[in-house]
Length: 407
Image 1 (tube, rainbow, N blue to C red):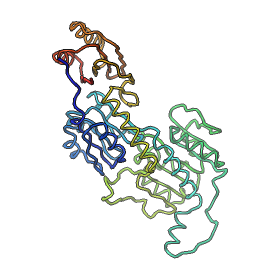
Image 2: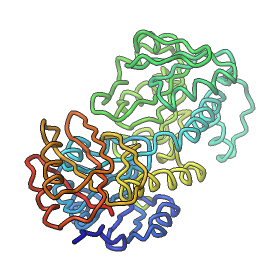
Image 3: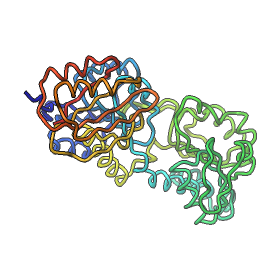
Image 4: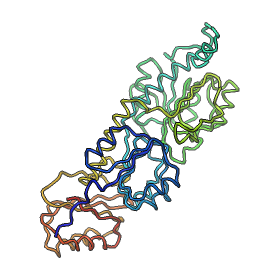
């Protein structure tokens, strides 16, 4: 007797933080049961709502902790509809056999354009001029107003976003310097800096685009602001906790920082209905935006298509290409049955799996195994029907995390 794949309409998907409607539509078209919620959920709420959920979609405000994952009784995959995945406990997800997917490129251009726009606005002192005009003050002056051409732009973090800012900034006539913990190939005429201090000393404008790992907390604080040029322009569109906000405010008040743009904060409202609080409110020549670096219609459409596509492939075929925590496997669909085995990365497990198939006289049409430090991921295509009891035997192999039957 054949053990059939679980019906798609009984696979529940929960999408949070108002991800683009295209994402919901893609899942609905695939036959899944989908719920879309506009806001994020706190840990207690999520512990309750995640029960019975097979796929969870989030953006940057929702935190997936070990405690949340302990309540996830059916979770197979998490989709991060954004670039970063630091809000997800990847180690625990991997141990539980939960694949995590993200959108590493889909909103890159949107963040780049916002950074460039803010650099120009701050160099022209536009936030203060705009505010004065709304207050009825006409102050036509070139004081503290400069072109960006010929200025030194320092980029902290030369990943997808940082490197693209480099290209656009150079096209506008800027001299680009960058610092990254990993060795990165310079694009165009950009100059790598050996240390962060070297970048701080040379830059007229500094923009941060690092990830959200814990080690990056307050990498820019009072000592770093002290090493910057007088009248520096400072921008953070990366992660809220990487900048000491009090130190930034003190630097603004002292005139060390002549203009600043902040899109991310150590603590952010969970939804649009909650008030925003920050000591930066009202600061001179300061742009404060509500974490909208990647919030353009184009970016959300791209993400709304990209992440569901990878998740649906994972559910329907077992393909893990694009996962940030699973070994990468991508296979075509064959005529037969497909079995997926997720297990702790221990020696000899594949032999035990194949012995069970051989005992049932089942021929293997194709088999692919990949491992990382934590888990092994095996996709096995077989040519004949199998007894349901065989699936129970596969689950009983020591070290097994999950067994799935696709078709």
